[in-house]
Image 1 (tube, helix red, strand yellow):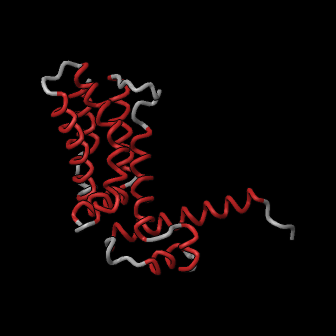
Image 2 (cartoon, rainbow, N blue to C red; image 1 turned 30 degrees about the vertical axis):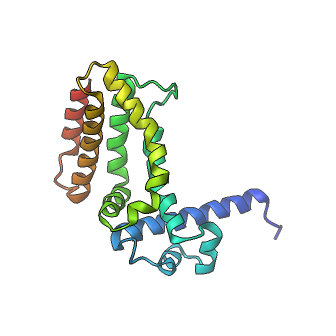
Length: 191
C-alpha cells in the first residue's frame, strides 16, 4: 500500500470535519445544545472524542461553525454578482433561494430557532454574527429606499421577520404549512 498523498489527507480531514458538523447539527437541533456532549457528537460522527479537538477547540467553537456555515449558505444567494447593489431580480432570487434552503435544510432551521430560546446561547455567536448580517441589512435597507418605501428600515425588518416566520412555521409543521403558496405570495409582494 502506497503512502497517502496530501490531497488524500486533506479529503479525509474534510470528510471527518463534515461528519462532525452534521452530527453536531442533528444532536444540537434534537437534544439541545446544553444537553449534547462532545462524547455524543464524537460517537455520532464515528470518531474518537480526542480527535474532535483536532477539528474544533470546544463545543462552542463547533456550534459557531455550524451556525455560520448555515448563515453563509443563506447569504451566498444574496447579491449574486457581488456589486453591493441589490436589484429587484436579485431580491426575488434571494427569496426563492431562502425558501429552497428552508425546504432542504429543515434541521438547520430547527436548530436556529431552538437556539434563540436557549438561555445564553445567542451570546456565544451574536458578536460574530452581527458583522456578517450588517452587509445584508444595509443592502436591503438601501434597496427599499431605492424602491421608495416609506420607511426602508422598517421594511427591511418586516422582510426579515417575514422570512424568519415562514421558516419557523415550516419547521413546526412541514406537512401542513403551505410553503409553495406562501413563497408565491411573498414574491408577488416584492415584484
